[in-house]
Image 1: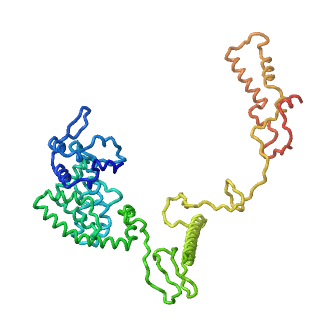
Image 2: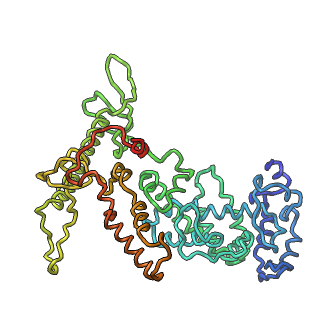
Image 3: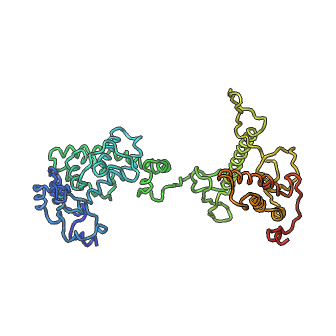
Length: 487
């Protein structure tokens, strides 16, 4: 679908002619002051600059926004983020140009940035100047990349056309971009120029007489920068493990197109054994113990044979080292455990003396830490007794108030005694001659007399036996109250 649309409507920068590029760069180079206004809901909106908007209307239809393609989803064709002033431009062309600029200052500089410690100061400054362009569209570098040094000011409205306009209006940005583009161009007969080079050349052409100086300076710098790029790529291919161990931006280096399937390289060996019996075509990396290799067997009577084999000796050595290391770890653990047990046993012993000479007041006992006695009994016990402690034989201990119901039932009731005392009084013979107070005193004395006579002070009188001499009753059915009454 994209190719069918591309035949009628330009979608990439390579679809534009030189005249169309010139008109597009002219519109992007126009400066305007950003103004804001508020709508009815109070939201702050950017106002459209009328002079620039009128110039965009004069552009051909291929450089302006298509209303028909506006209904297509962004998943099919990427569209650029545009401000109200530039929203009438072709969003596909603007998005494609800015995407090429982003790749030029990020992906295509990864290897030479890794090699920057071996570069000249001028080349190092060039790399930093190119990376500073990232600040126009990103505050935080993506893919764990290192932040650029002295980044350019961030574009507040995030308009991609405004970002391209800032690049076009800065001659040094154009010169640096042309240097890195030419340094990536192959010098062989069949080569293809980078897609962004036509846009950069046309942007430099607008500076008139100053454009010759920019072209000459960028061409000379690109020649030296190409040599530095070749040296960086050569070092990158020879020592890829050095890059993969980096922690700053190793993720995107692993995903680099030139690094697919080359994370582990096998160096070619040209050494041949003196015995002539065996010769290896490729040698494995010295960093791996368990590896594979190709062995060629030479025999005068047999043809050459090749076989893949694993280095069994290397595996056995690795296993022996692992077993030895495991034994050392177990030994260290046992030693530490024995030390802890010995320390705790020393603290818990009875002859343990405190290390500190603290002067305590009289009468205050010293507290020994971890003085919990060590259990030496076969069965668990809730109390602690010395080993020579004499224990008595188990005996029956009766309850405190064990009432003898036979004695209680068959004895004379206190009410009967009280009745007899009342009958002896003169109440039955007539009126009592004394006063009411005398009657109350006599009644109280009568009650005290009955209580002392019967000895009804405690239930201990009805106990079967004393505490110490109580016999152990035989096991059997217990007597109930009704059985005693029936007797």
